[in-house]
Length: 296
Image 1 (cartoon, rainbow, N blue to C red):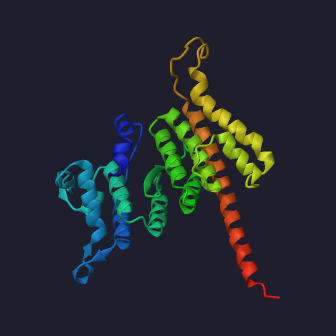
Image 2 (cartoon, one colour; image 1 turned 90 degrees about the vertical axis):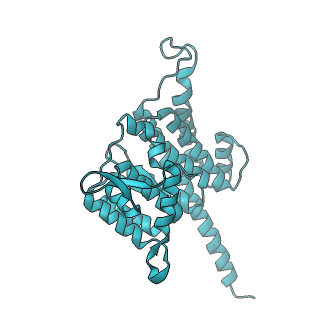
Image 3 (cartoon, rainbow, N blue to C red; image 1 turned 30 degrees about the horizontal axis):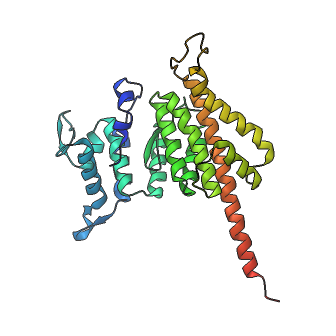
């Protein structure tokens, strides 16, 4: 089953590395938006099937018989999906939203919900059905969101998951894992653009993209340096004789470096996926034009 927000970030929540807060008006708006985009049925369309399915998923996720949330007297009582969002802990609100999108991955709902979160000055956004922290600490936020959306639109599933995981690991303080996954996301994007599932190195993938003209030759040196930066951040420090005699003792990657690598990975992913989609559109356009030509 899918892992929702509170389990993905259990350590960060426990250590109070993540700060969550949702006002009552915002919670009410979230419920109304999700309700409007839900699948309904039954007599007079009164039953909200998406809410029902999300509840089942949440109960399985929590291992509980019923959902509980705070009522107006600040007492935890059994509740339905709507009450869970309005009176649940902030982490439970994000769990509920992710469970809803797990049942109904509606991109129009996602856009409207994100507009609502932005309007209410919330630092959270929903990207491909997952909650992502987008506060002032994260540089190039819009670029990251755009990258995730393009990866989804381009069916680059592996890259999408790896880039999402890289951001999630950064939020949770797992900086070394964040760097590794950011690097892997680029390899997956390259494979998507090349239409291959072969186990090729970053260098071989780059070589094929350059050969096919998808990436200009003058980008080669930059991309090679990116790989050195990403791999160096997680490997160089563990070599014997480095780190002032610390030998093989693992040293955490500084957050600033991990964030820098993720932002670079996002920019590279965005560039490659856009170039690939432009190429596909041009190919389709060329085919259409050819078909439209009058026969001699």
